[in-house]
Length: 115
Image 1 (cartoon, one colour):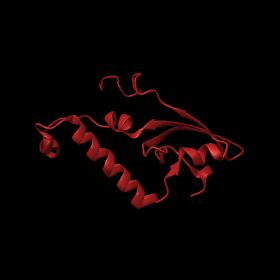
Image 2 (tube, rainbow, N blue to C red):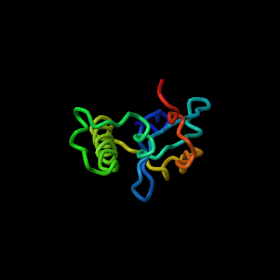
Image 3 (cartoon, one colour):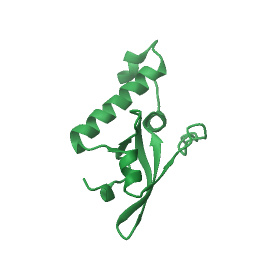
Image 4 (spheres, rainbow, N blue to C red):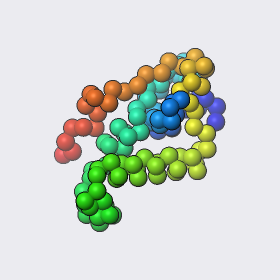
């Protein structure tokens, strides 16, 4: 994959082994110029509702982190099997891409109640 083909929901990893989903991207003349990354745990926390019915019964009496960690690890494995390459934050910066990070202490855009 060419770095300019990076798009929403691709994964990026930092030098500490933290994974991020690409949340927003900007291009100029078909070149990637700016990305906003969101920590994968933050994204997974707001991608599905949690209840203990059916498939989630195995998480009964366990910390919510066990459920989230399973979601995160499954997403990373699925992505790697499908796409292979995970770019690093360093590769983005070295290619002149401005990198922003979502603030995980601020409300997530999907944090409003579902109606």
